[in-house]
Length: 175
Image (cartoon, rainbow, N blue to C red; front, side, top):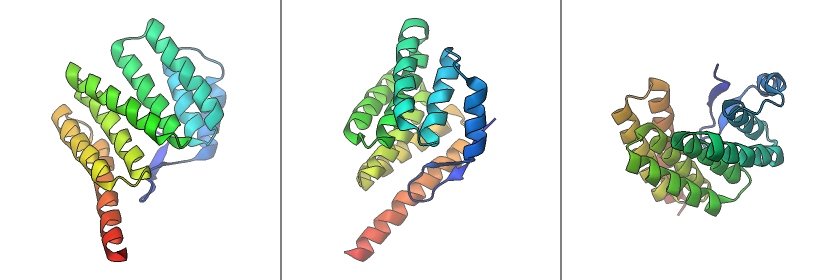
């Protein structure tokens, strides 16, 4: 079940039903499986519980290192970087997402690489690096098309490119 109802047109943050997310957090409870930990991280992040999200994210990365696959570890690290982004730690998030994107591309995992680039684009958007954000979103679109991603993922990437283009136009008009 997807808790995402849309994306904010400027920040590209997920729009969610907070009550549904909190109900799901209650359902998951203290489960310690990697999928449960990662879902909890995301739910805590979108509900604004960033300190808890960071703690659970650290735990999910450790769990993925010990018991998961390389793909699991990359996904956990990407999710960890998104928590860093929400906490305003843009340089750390950018660095982690860059490493994850490069590793995923090196392994030929287009879907995971696209996931990392999409989030790095959001980090760069937060840091007002519009050229870097647009390049990341374009790379994401290419990788998602290559991987045969679902239409909703392609649409979210096109929305991101459009958001960057609108900001660029607004910035050029303002100057």
